[in-house]
Image 1 (cartoon, helix red, strand yellow):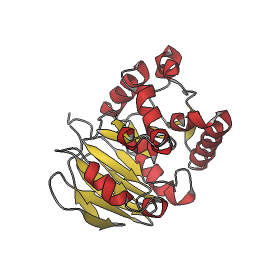
Image 2 (cartoon, rainbow, N blue to C red):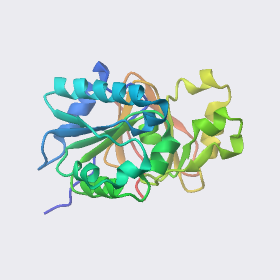
Image 3 (tube, rainbow, N blue to C red):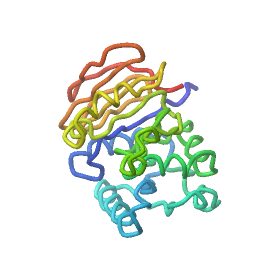
Image 4 (tube, rainbow, N blue to C red):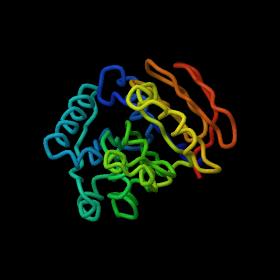
Length: 246
C-alpha cells in the first residue's frame, strides 16, 4: 500500500467564514478511512479570556456543521490541558484538526512535547488533515512571533521557537501587516532562519497542499521565498512547489 499523503490548509486569516467552505470541504474529504469529526482548537486565543476562546469555538462549530461535518471544540487553554488523557484521546479518528488564531507563541509553548501534540502528529501521519489560520499556522514554523513581547517593547524577544513542523517562517495577514507596522514585511522576510523558507499568506486566503506541492485559494495571494532565493508572488488558483516538511 502506498503511504498516505499529508494534507494541509494554511490560512492567512478568515477562518470559519463562507469563503473558506470549499477549502474545508476539501481538507475534511481528503482524510481517507477516518470519521467526519473536525476538531476546532482555539488555544491561541486563550490568553484573551474564556469569552474569546468560546466565541472562536462557536464559530467553528457553526461553520463545520453547515458543511455536514461533526465538529467539536477541544477545551485546551493552558499547557496542563495538553497533558490530560481525555483531551489527547479526542484526536483519534478525526478527519481534520483546525487551530484558529490568537497568540502563536502561546500556542507553541502550550503544545510543545505534550501528549496532545504527539496525538496530533500521529493522526496527521495516519491521514488526518491539519490546518489553521493566523497564529494557527505561525506556530508550526521553525520560528514564530510573540505579539506580547512586541507590545511590551522587547523587539529582541519577538521571535521565539515554533514547533518546527514546517521548515519555514510564516507571515499570516500578509497584505495587512504593512498597514499595521510599516516595514514589517521586510523585517519578517529577513527573519527567516538560514535554510528555512518564508511563506506569507494574505487575509481570506489559504495555501493548501501536501507539504511540498501547493495551491493558493481565496481572494488574495501568497508570497513565497525559498531558502536562499528571492521571493515571488503566487495568485489564487495557481500552483507552486516548496518543500516545507523537515
